[in-house]
Image (tube, rainbow, N blue to C red):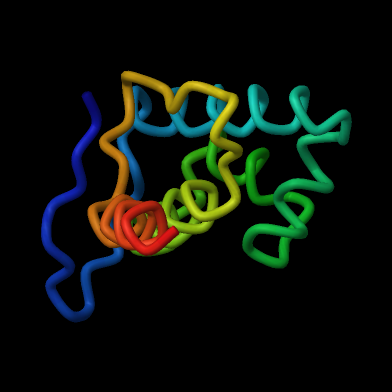
Length: 103
């Protein structure tokens, strides 16, 4: 399971290859589920149609990758299993639990 280290100010370390691969695979799954191109998903999720290409090429920081994972989690449909290889952000889980409890 991929977990992100705490953000430490100016950290600009790129996401490791196995982390990048897991995020790209999650993007592919969500894009396929929605019937859109992965570039469209990148544009919707983080404002960059080249995000997933940049991620595969090692041109994305941990911070930016973590932002994308949080956004993917927020966009993730309930009828699609979240990838086991990526730790789902807690804030999204907590928001979903609250909304289910108040329904």
